[in-house]
Amino acid sequence: MNEFRHVSVLLSECIDALAIKPEGTYVDCTLGGGGHSLEIVKRLTVGRLIAIDRDGDALSAAGQRLAEYRDKITFVKDNFENLAAVIAKYAPDGVDGVLFDLGVSSYQLDTGERGFSYHADAPLDMRMDRDSDFSAYDVVNTYSCADLARIIRDYGEERYASRIASAIVKRRELQPIETTLELSDIIKSVFPPKERFEGKNPSRRTFQAIRIEVNRELDAIPAALDAAVAGLKSGGRIAVITFHSLEDRLVKEKFREYIDGCTCPKDFPVCVCGFKPSLKLINKKPITADTQELDENLRARSAKLRIAEKL
Image (cartoon, rainbow, N blue to C red; front, side, top):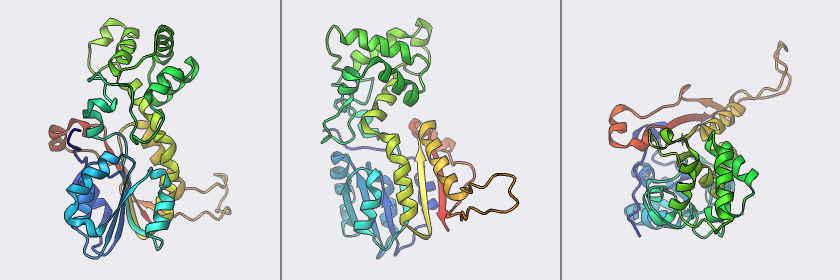
């Protein structure tokens, strides 16, 4: 197994965002390589960190990296969509901060055998939780042409979604599609020659779409954000890093519900629906990586950090 390496994006910005109290309770919903968790737990005295990840490799590697602080950490193998139950079990009095670093980790992308990357030949997998019995192989080889086109269009924002879906279905009629490079070659075949060789790999958006479908990534976000807001103490902070527009839109919309959720008609002189905001934005515009971080980590180029505080 490769070393679990994940370069923490917007690290100092996240730590500043959480305004960590030494005696506070914090939740890292996406432990990954443990970079954010390490900086949180370093700042705790009698406080506690609840570290969640559904990837057993992440929990194992981060457990070793954070061993010095183990007495202050509760490790939880779970999907963050179950955050409400996790907080109810381990922090029933509420938490002071919640962090989400959404998307796929550097380790998952760089470990070819995990099947997330179109750069390495590997079995079609893409499971963040390796105990799951549903993988990219199932999506590619069993979904209807219409469903494939839908997820590639909706989750990958791919303009050639219908063509790619048709090409996948046509190829799998001959034999099952088993590897990442097989799939990548099928995707590339759909693109005009000029687009195959300029800029980013043509497979990128389709691989993203299939990964999101396999792991139900977008489905989990709204419920997790609801649980985070419900579980925060007054003055507690929620910080969310997103890596593409689909994630960012969900976060922005969910924050808006808690900040400006009045349902009264716009022409009403006063609010009669009884809505009271429960969050306030800390940064009106998302925070992005500075030039130095971009030079050191290209994967930070699409990252956006949104921060809100519980009223």
